[in-house]
Every structure is written in structure tokens, then in C-alpha cells.
Image (cartoon, rainbow, N blue to C red; front, side, top):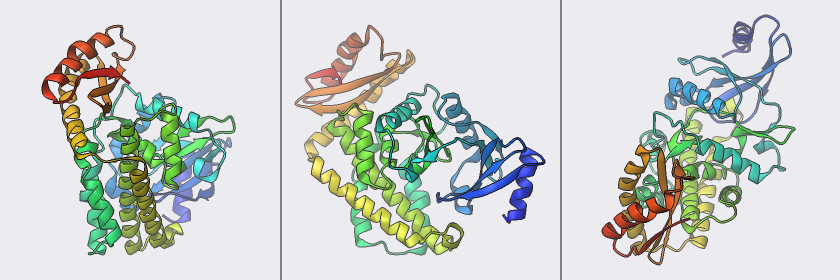
Amino acid sequence: MTNEEINKLVINILGEGSEVLHPITGGMMNLSFLVKDKNDKKYILYIPTEQANEMVDRPLEKEHQAIIHELGITSKNVYFDEKTGIKMNEYIEGNSLDHIADFDYEKVAKLFKKLHSSIVLSREDYAPFDRFVNIYEKEAKSFEKESSPLYQELRDFLFSKREYLESQRLSLCHNDAQRSNIVKTPNDEYYFIDFEFVGNNDAIYDIAAFGNGLVSEGRELLNKYYNDKPTDEEIRRYYLWRIFISLQWYNVAVTKHYRGEGEKHGFNFLDVANHFLKNAKDAYDGYHLEIKDDDVKDDTIKLIITTLDKVRHFLRKDGGDCEFVSYNDGVVYVRMHGACQDCSYAYNDIKDLVEVILQEEVPGVVEVRLA
């Protein structure tokens, strides 16, 4: 859109006397502008790129925007064109976390928890691996026929863990929860913005997305999210999802380079692609520093998770749920959710239902405990 077209759009939405103040830098999927109405109330106008519209279900995005606004962790949407993807939200005074170094990891963790504890879920699962193969990688390969050896090595390792990652409990997730999509206000409050990729997913995927700049930042957030006591399995999932997200954005950047979108965004997208490939390698190295793979244990965990899915079916009928946390020396640790979380019968459910079934169906399981 030309500057004249953008100005006309703002006036059509907000009325006479409204104007565009300035563009906002950052973001690979939208051109963003700070605007104001005749009363000087500020808003953000988002105009998506062509590639974004190919990837995003706009009616679903509109639904997600409303759900997350009800949770009190984003601003109100005032305009949404489902055909073009153009939208306008009330402005949240403050700075996105990619522009500041001083922020509170514990408060960011609480923001994530509020989203992930939403009773209302999306009507769609995010299905990250299907997206990866059928959209992001497919497009990149249409331009770059042969992947770099490092990309292929990391991809092969990641996809060997696909079944394990896809078996995790699903929560409502942002799925693009990088620092640029979190705003800190002058009152030290934190809010999400940008909901193009919301869907049901493993909550740790969101934490991994926070490590877009540095893997260590997402790892620190993981600590705060789990009160400085993440389990080995939670650490394992963090690094695997961090590799996944980095390779995904590597493919996006490659596609944008060959499409000639660098001039529109002021980015050298090959530099961006190289950043994410290095980020993926950092996550891979972190994984092997902190995690010791055990194929026998991995097979047992897969069977535990599959068996737990049968148990969860019964718990969900009463509004509850349980999540696999870890497995060590014959003991399975689970976390209860929903109605089960504060229920006085939770211990009985674990011993009389979860433990009995796991002992019957998974060799080696001797006990189930609350994490």
C-alpha cells in the first residue's frame, strides 16, 4: 500500500482528524504503524505481507484475539479485515522486550502461564511439524534445492524426536512468543501482541520461541516458568523446540530473500537465515550439554505418554487433566490440571486410576507421584 492509501485507511477506520504518526520497525510478517485519532488516542495498524496471508487463517486469528483479550493479557482489537488481514489494535504504551534489556523474567513467566492456563482452547491445533514440512520447508526448497549440511544434520536429529514432541499435552499457545511480541509498560506490566499463529500446542514451544535472539534467554524463562526447578524432560523439550523454531525461521528467511522482500523490510534475509541456523546449532549444543539420551528410557516414556492419553480421556469428562512430567527409576511424575488441580480426590485418581493402568501397561513402572 502507498502512504496515501494507508492514510485514507486510517481515516476510514478512526474518522477525520486521525493520522499516521510513524512506522514501527521489526517483524517479518507485518508492516506496522503507530496512528492516533482526533482525541490523540493511539493505535497500532498492521498490514501483513503477502507471505503472511498465505500462512494465516484470518477468521481464526480474529477469534484468538478476542479470547486472549478476555484473559486480560492484550489490548482490544478495533478493526479486522478478514480478507486482507489488515487490523488495528489499541496501543499498549511501552516497549517490546526486543528493545530493552531490563525486564522481569518472573513476570514474563506469569504472562505465559495465564495464557497456557486458559480454559478456552482454540478450535485448531497448531500442528507444528505439519506446518514445517508442508509450508515453510516446502517453500524454501522451491528456491534452494539443496540444504546446507548443517541444516540437514539438525533437521534429521529434530525429526527423530517428532513422535515424542507431538505426544505432549496441548494448551492454548501464542506460537510466536518472541521478545518482539511482548510489551512492557511503564508500570512494569507485560502484554502479548500479534496473534497470527495462535493454536493448541505444547506450552514449552512458547518458552522456546522466547529464545529467538539468544537460546540462553529462553532457557532462563524456562527456569522461572517452573519455579527454578524444570525437570529433565522439560529441559529436553525446550531445546528440541528451540531447534525446531530456529529451523522454521531459517526457512522463512530463505524464502523471503528469494522473493525479494528484503527491500520492503530493510533486512538482509540471508543474514537472518544464518542467525537462525546458528541459533539452532546453539540449541543443539545446549541439548547435548544438559541431556543424556537413553533409547530404552525414551521408548518407555513414549509408552507412558501414549497410555496416559487413555487415562486423560476419563479425567477430561469431569473437567480435569494430567500431564506427564518425568520418569526416573520406575517412578512416573505427573502434574494435575483443571478440576483435578485442587481436587481433594486427586491423590486417589493418581493411585487408583493413573498408577494402576500404567503399572499394567508399561513394563518397569512401579509408582506414580505428583510432580
